[in-house]
Image 1 (cartoon, rainbow, N blue to C red):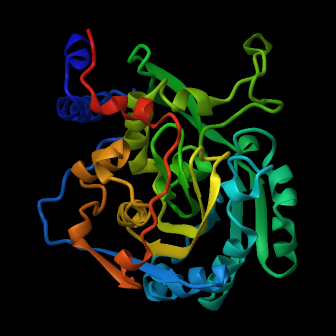
Image 2 (cartoon, rainbow, N blue to C red; image 1 turned 90 degrees about the vertical axis):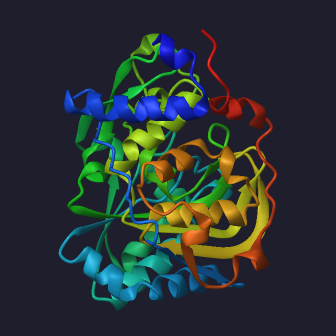
Length: 354
C-alpha cells in the first residue's frame, strides 16, 4: 500500500486499474476492467431536449433512439430504477411524470411489461412509491413494483480508503444481471461526495442492500446495517474508485437525465431547485453523463469516477466526440452551485500522504 499512498491522481488511477483487473481474476473485485478502445473516432450520441413539459422532453428524447432501444431490449426483462434517495423531498427524486413518459414510450414500441425497482437511502421502496405517486401508474401500465432490499443479492467487494482492504457488500442481483435491460431515469443534481450525480451513480448506489429497519443514526450495535455506507468508500478516493470499479456490471443500458428541475448546492437530497427544463437521453451512459456535467457548468476535471471511466474506455467521455442531437448544449448551460464541502470532495485529486 505504500506506493498508493505516495501516488498522484494519475498514478493512483493507473495502479488501481491494474489492481482492479488482477484482483477481479482472483474473485476479490466485482469485474474485469474493460480494455480501452483504440478507436478514437467512435462517437457518442446523446439527445438533448428542452421545453416547458417535463414528460414531453423525456418522450421526445427517447424517440431519437426508438429503433436502438427496441433492438437493445429484444426479449430482455425491462428494469426501470428511479432515483428516490430521499422520498421525503420530491425534488431529490425521479418525478412520476418522468416515469410515465418512459412507460408511454415503451408501450409505443410494444414493450409493455416493466419492473420498477428501488432501494432508497432509508425507508422502504414502497413507502417512496406511495409518497411520490408511482402506484397510480399501475392503473394504466403493466408494472411490477419491487423493493430491491427484499430481492436476491450477490456478495461482491469494494474498497474503503480508510484501509484500502476489500470489503464485502451485498449488491442487487436484479441490477447486476446483464440479461436485464436497465433504465436509469436520474435527476440532475449536485452531490456531497462526487460533485454531481447522474445516470451511473443512480444504478451503482441503488444496488447495495440495506436491512429492514435501517435509518441514518441507528445504533451500529443493533446489527442493522446498510451496505450503501461501505460502498461509498470512506471518502472521496474510495467512492470515486468504487463507482468506477462497479460500472462495468452496474451500468445502465439506457440513460435518462431529467433536468427539468435540477438540484444545486447541498445535493443529493437537501439542495435548492434549478429551473433548467432540459432532458438527456442516450444508450452510452458515459456520454449522457458527460453532457449533463457540461449543462451544469461543472469542470469535468473535478469528476473523479467519470474521468476514470473515460480513461478505461467504458464509453465516450470526450465531449468533442459526442454528437448532441436536438438542442445546442451552449444554449442551455446553467452553472450549478456546488455542495458546501466541495473542497473536501476534491481530495481525490491530491497526492496521498504516507
